[in-house]
Image (cartoon, rainbow, N blue to C red; front, side, top):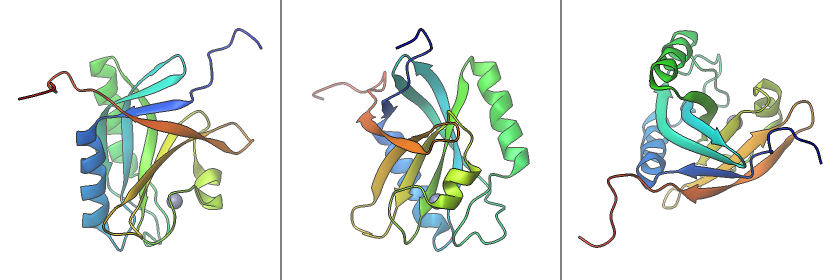
Length: 155
Ligand SMILES: [Zn+2]
């Protein structure tokens, strides 16, 4: 053990954000949809405050994604204004599983969370979250529902 920041093991995403990612993924199919996750790291938790859709400029958007540099810049400026960070990226797999492909791993920024939305089972899209580590693959993050300030139990 050392005194470094603990490695995250959980990612919190609100129910609203989850539905938004699924809607964007469906709208982009058969292309992959992609974007960034804005929020903060708190100890072992990655808290996603906002999800953002970006233009996918990959040459083969059917099976790859690449966030448009202008969108990346715009979201970077947005988090600066809000006192947040870009904590990761998300993208969809219109056909494949919700795991990171070899190409996803190669392209991912180390330390970033990666949420994958898999649409293969169209009734129940699957979301899984991963943390890409520097040069040593990735590990899965437990995906938990983030309570929103406006959500209350009951009516
Ligand atoms: Zn992928």
